Every structure is written in structure tokens, then in C-alpha cells.
Amino acid sequence: MRKKARRKRKKAEAEYLAIQEKIALSQERTRELLRKEHGKGFVRSAKQWQASIADHIGQIADNLKLKDITEAIAMATVAYYGYKVFGSIHGSAYGIISLKLATSMNMPAGMAGTAGLMLLGLASVFPFRTREIARKNLKDRGYSDEQIDNMTDAGDKILEEFHPFG
Image (cartoon, rainbow, N blue to C red; front, top):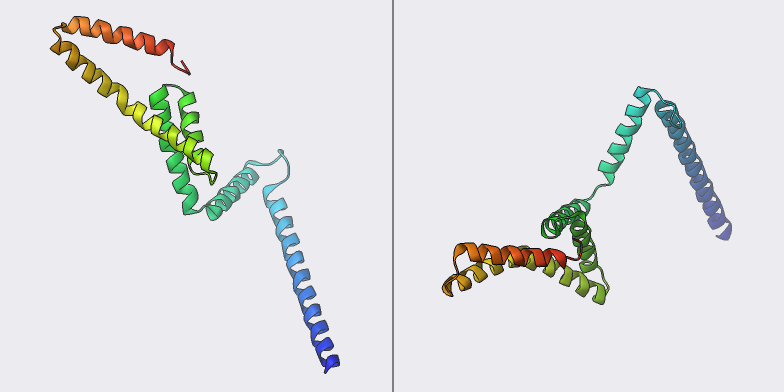
């Protein structure tokens, strides 16, 4: 019985090694073909460059998942709002970092990221509402439109001085 089991095991091992050898040979042949088709280094013909780039784009498309696409859309949206609120590229970075922190598995980092995203959301809405409320209150107190414009312009200048990225 043991001899039979040993023979079976040796036969299975031999088959496994033969399959591994075939795989290694086919991978080597594939590499060889790609080397010929794509060329090597930066000295390539236009046709070789096109084939190489097309293969790389195909590999990226094959490895792309729905999660990656939705994450990219979320980052682009947050970067846009960050840029809109801060008025510079720093706002985009702030938005992306806040999103990454908010989606992390670490509780303090998640809270910090959520707070950052809340700040972006509030900052994109809050200044306009504040200006409307201020205009209404000043109008009720009897100020003219010209005086109100001067006050809000002065307020904007003060805010620009204290802007963290400005």
C-alpha cells in the first residue's frame, strides 16, 4: 500500500514539475515576443512605441475595477470643491487629503477627514448665506446699498488677509 502511495505521489510531483516547466517556457516565449514587438529601451521605432503603449493601456483597462473608478470620481469632485472654496490648488490637495483621511480605518484620522470635508461643504455655502443675511440686516437698519457694498468689500479684504492659503 505504501509503495503504491509513493508511486502516485512521485507521479503527481513529476506531472506538476512538467506543468511548471511548460508554464515557464511559455512565459519566456511571451517575453521574447514582446521584446521583439516592443523593442527595448528608448530606441524604438514608432510602431514599437505604439504597440508598447497600446499594451500598457490594455493592461490598465484589464486591471481597472469599479471601486477604482468611483474613488477617482469622488477625488475629482472633492478636488473641484476644494479648488472652488480655497481658490487655489491647495484647496484641491486639502479636499483629497480630507477624503483619504475620512475613508481610513483609523478613528482619529477618520474624524479629522470628516471634519475637513464638513468644512469644505460649509465653506462652499456659508459665505454666500452670510453675505445675504448681512445685507438684509444692514438694509433693515437703514444703510444704503452703496454703504453695504463698501462694508462687504472691506470684509472681503479682511478675509483675504487671514486666508490660510492666500
